[in-house]
Image (cartoon, rainbow, N blue to C red; front, top):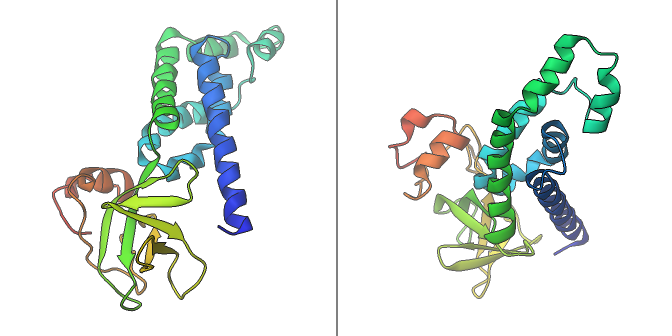
Length: 223
C-alpha cells in the first residue's frame, strides 16, 4: 500500500469512528435529531464503501436537506427560539418528534450493525486482466478486510497494485492482475465502454435497484 492509499484508509477509519460515536450518542439520548443527522451526513460518502450503508444514509440525508436552515444543537435551538417565529419553533418540534426520533434511531442502529459488527462489503465490477486488456468480468459482492488492504471475492483474495496498465489489484497467491471498481450507474464498466456483464444472483436485485436505479430490470442477469 502506498502512502496515498494508507492516508485514505486512515481517513476512512476515522470517519467510521465518528459515525459510530454520533449514532451511539443519539441512541443514548445525548443528542437531538438535527445534531445527529448533520454529524453523520458529513460522512455520507461512506455509503460508497458498503451498499448496506446506502439506505440509512439516504434516510438521514433526506432529513438533513429539509432541516439545514435550523440551528444545530439543542442549546442553540433554545437560545435562538426566543427570537424565532412560532412557525420556526414548530418546525424544530416537528423534527424532534417521536416519529422522527424513531426514524433516526432505526438508521443509527443500521449504521452500527454494519460499521461495528460485520465486514464491510460492496457490489463491485471485477474483471480478470491476466490475459490482456479485456478479460472475463462479473458484477458481485466484494468484502473488505478490517484494514481495507485486502478484498475478497469468490474465495479469492486481492490486494492493490500500482504496477501494470489498466489494472489496480492482483490476486494473492497467483499474482493474476485484475481491475476491481465500483459499478457505473450507466453500466459502462468495461475499458472500452459498455459490455454485457454477468451479475451474481445474490446481488442482482440490489444492483438494479441501488446502482442502476432501474428496479424493473431486476430479473436481468447481465448488465
